[in-house]
Image (cartoon, rainbow, N blue to C red):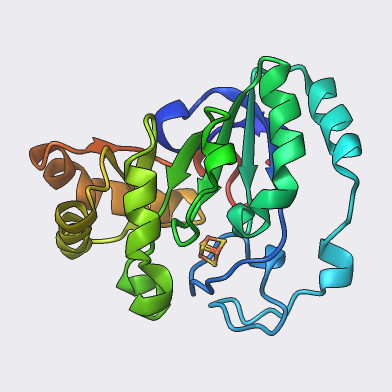
Length: 226
Ligand code: SF4
């Protein structure tokens, strides 16, 4: 799909999205439960049907579709795309060979392969905090966080609601070097995003971190496909 990158360092840039199915976490407020929640464990309680939501495609067809959008930036998201990183490699190599910038949105629980890192893609790593409802042992993988922190250009994007969440972020930054920090308000409708953004803004700036909104929510609300 063609859209704009809504979050983080490239917010506002025209891009095309590749959204992959499956996730190794189950965050209760996940905004893309249709990619993984087949049993209704998320806040919405909806059990999505993988037969309706997922569409297998050869990577060459995905490449052709992406090149057809004629946008400079390709964002690979999910679900958790790095669960399929080996199978993603040919597609990502073809995109970078064609001169596209590629960003991968990941929850930071899977160590990136060397040959993926060598492509020069940007990782937007979003480690999950306790309010996600995921057990700590699943959402915080020290080896993976340290590996991402060592990749030049990586951005760490933390979904937060209150200033208490910022203390949890600070602990991760101290322990695993997860910098640079971007704080993003949780919310799937504009009012919710705005409320959390206002609650967080002053303290994020005071801590010397970056702040991002969710631009696609401000423009299109919780519509799918943007
Ligand atoms: S890691 Fe991302 S895709 Fe997976 S459940 Fe959490 S918010 Fe959703």
